[in-house]
Length: 140
Image 1 (cartoon, rainbow, N blue to C red):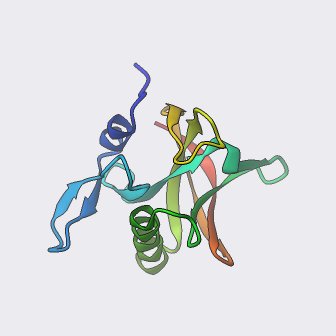
Image 2: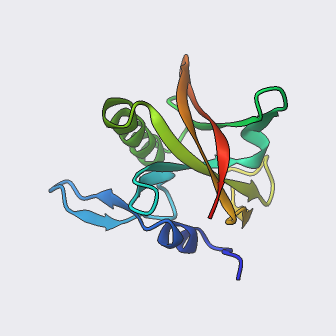
């Protein structure tokens, strides 16, 4: 059965965030865009389909997972925390899954559907205020 809700995808990946006290808590699927996946043993992020590109030559998919200029500081702070974690403790390797927007011009965006059959594992690449993960697919 395909996953259609963000909370279900976070549950599938067994993903959590941290309370200020350091205790685990579920990902807030409304305004957090990443967390730590126990299933993958690494940070995992959302990537909008329209902010994702495929490199045929290297057989990699790149997705923008953060930009410090994005509105919505809760989501950006969450992303930056887990990106820094991956850079420090996971050799800058992280994962993302692809979500599609109902309307890419809508703000805030709403999720149309989720590609829940796979995640992409790869290297974090920083480019100015934007951050990408460039990876290869892993079937779930």
